[in-house]
Image 1 (tube, helix red, strand yellow):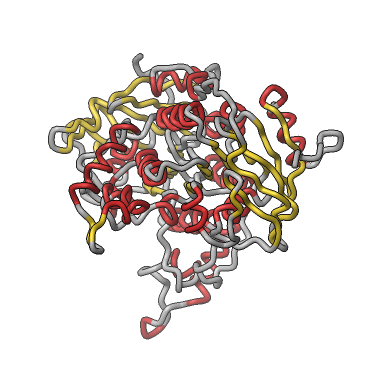
Image 2 (cartoon, one colour; image 1 turned 120 degrees about the vertical axis):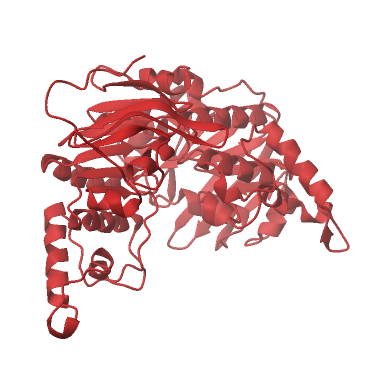
Length: 512
């Protein structure tokens, strides 16, 4: 496909034309063009590795293109660094904001350029007044004097947007801004984006959530393997069309559910309770079965699986694995019994970011890899290499830091670490959050294959299509209670959401 005609209207605020960029022998971008217009939200789509990050960094002045050019208001411009891009009105809002936690919101926004009074003293009243005006402009009630420490990710992103506006940003690049947000927080962010778009800002929006692109954006540019696939209007496209452009296959292939013979009960949870968090939770998971815990944010799903694994200590109830009762509050006992837990936050709880790929994979097997308290590197490397092949991990070398991997490949490392323990029960919390659609399909295929081999899988997911596509049964939680159990044959978006929201006539007692 070729790029559609951007139209005969005004020149784009910012444009890339025939830009290429290589890193050594790796061609990250090849002859890519992109036009961003005032008052328009434009989506950038593609798998991890498609070239999106490189394109963003060129627009932000972090990288310089090998060939091609950047146009600002139709005139060629060169960005020699991020400061040049910022001065030209280009701002990037990243998934994980970087604020100074011990400074106030106002101090973060105007750091290094505060208005001064006599004797070069900072005019705090002017700083707070300007910050309050920015918040009013964005329609957000945040106290300028409030410290950044303790702000939610959503509020931190609002502060970053306010900072961009304080520099008179005309182009706002939003890189996975909703990955860590709840539904209500994402809705507020979208309202802010609409406000900026209405004021004439050009917005470039990157997200792995296709429904957000369709909701927010008018046009989409799709990259695959560093090349431009198409730039086109989203009106008239379907999610399946967009997936096909991104990965070359249909949306239906994202959920490759294999038939599996159900075996004996591997995990049994009976009347599990943690006061003030969840109450009277009972369910079973059989070998060969994928059971999904669904519900709205705050329903208590993640807290339940953490108590099952022993990260949090339950106040009452019991957990048994293969008929063996586990002591409460003991992850070691859970691991010894054959439970593995892939946590929701892979960077904070699933990986040691300062360590290598092979060392992370080997963390759960130090006893078998060591002798006299020393890890045998040959065994550690062999184990990591084996799992890298099994999970189709994409990496430069196993000794490289795990932090250089894409989000999808980091998730594969966490999976490898736990699957290497040969568990009977795999608990996986938000298995594909922040992962591109192609890697989602790989993770889903892996989970389905593991279940077919007899593994019992308990999955927590906020992605309703993922729940419906992969689960044999759906357990719905609301406000710390298990309110419905829905078999695969009866699970629809309407039935799951009705139970999660507590609409009448939809609830049934979960099977003990």
